[in-house]
Length: 405
Image: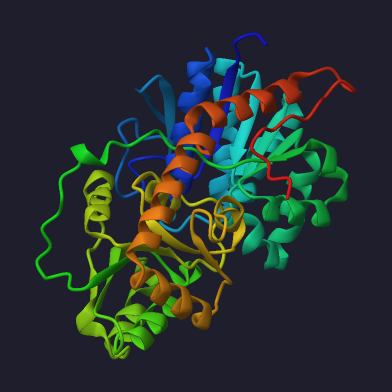
């Protein structure tokens, strides 16, 4: 496969907070390591006409970041409240101009809504292949919006290839658009090895007493936080524990969760760190005894893989890739989503069995290093691009970390 000029489109990219942005950066660097020229187009910026951009016009602000050409779109609203349609129409026109300048070989959209639609429409019009990567919310939540369903279905049908971070998401796409069955692949995120010995141990303002049960990330309803709090409240009379929430609640849910914690009966045992830089957040694994990821739906969360690399004993729900990666009794304890009784039983079992904590943590770390390595993900992406560019009728699917059970 010759070196390609690839256009990746996304709604977020570091320093924006979010797992999709982190994944786009990681995948872009993996593709660049194969010799391809990667352009990342970020569509999330809306500016008011009262504050002029450097050029005073709509368009891209371009930088080179770790071998990636990053184009951040600036939109100037003339009314102060541009509609989504106006914004996306402007984005489409800007992306087309960028293509006329760069002559991309392949378009690759992350997130079916908005980004995927604009990207696939342009790819079809200029005769280029279109790949779309489904990360979670687009098929878990947005598909239930009747105003968005038609657009989602069109993108699925029109993509040359679709990738998913879990088989559960892939199977839903097959149900929604049966014609895509022979042009999809599901494989997990990866993570570079982390040397936790080089990461400072935090010194929290309050004492973390007893068994420290933690979860990490952008805290929101889909993460199953309420079930975790209820489980800890039930266990608190029997086990000395601290519930450590590393991160913060998303703004639109924050008031609800603050009141929820106050009413939980164990507010004095719950510590919320607030939003932290990634390396500082990773340091809290030094203070963690049990890592819990009780998500109701969650794609393939980076926080899970980081906890595995840290060698933590894990209790995880069976949702999405969490339940595909973790094997009950082998490298974690797996529970049903939205099931407080399961959480109580398995948290109590781990909290009272230190040897089990150690055994599961060591097994989780071995699996992360073996099955969730950047080399494995790089090979999977290489296979995707080979499939997309292969002559019709010659595609052979070979994605090495698909589960066969």
